[in-house]
Length: 315
Image (tube, rainbow, N blue to C red; front, side):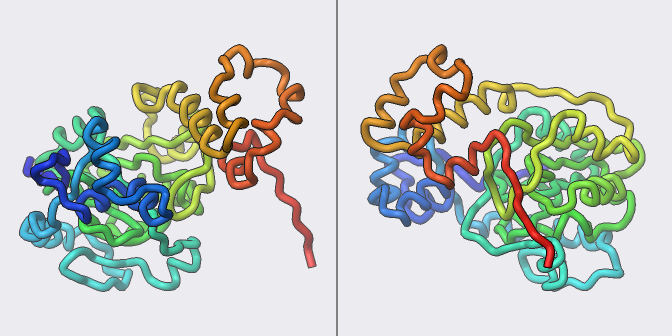
């Protein structure tokens, strides 16, 4: 199984401002907003201890990409038009953009694979694995088809999950990690994923349940484990539904508290940070008029909402 690392740990010797910002979109966003002076400033104060990375030049995968695209060509549907470039097969037409509400954005989705995903990729090193909603991957594999709506340097095929541009039973295995909450029609996307999986092939699909509003291009649906099962039960044999490591409840708890604190300012934030767990476990009604609740901005209220309500009318 051939792979190419596109990121490496930033050091004093290899530091490059553009490469650092490219590998760390949160830092790039902070620099653009003026809350951080520069990538170098972040690296000196935080990046070294956090083992932040730099992004390597994309030309290191150019030959590998060319070879992979030729392998992918035989897996493409013939009833859909596309634009072919040196980087990818682009099926993201204006019609699909409009139908599935795809919007351009500066946001970047970039995550590595966990041990379970790596095991699935390695198990199918002689076949082809579809990464449905890959984001910008830090490692480029010769047996993984990176399918995305964004034209990252690691993107191999561009399109929408609801209309996958691949022939039936094209892939030996499929990964879909933190994707289905972002698609307009997850039921149709699940049906398409099942269609392009070979008989005997394996699917690994992860979605959030208790996570705040997040992501690109939209965030439509969080799911219970029963909801996730319901998406695939008509097409696939469900072997197991579980949670582990990076998706255990502690991640939701710390995410919510950290983001809540980021929405507060001054003494209100300081007071909130001094509260104990026991101080936050009473009847919610007793907190409604407290500053840490009343002063949370609308943007944060929507991000962390317990629920939302739609009001509408018909003409």
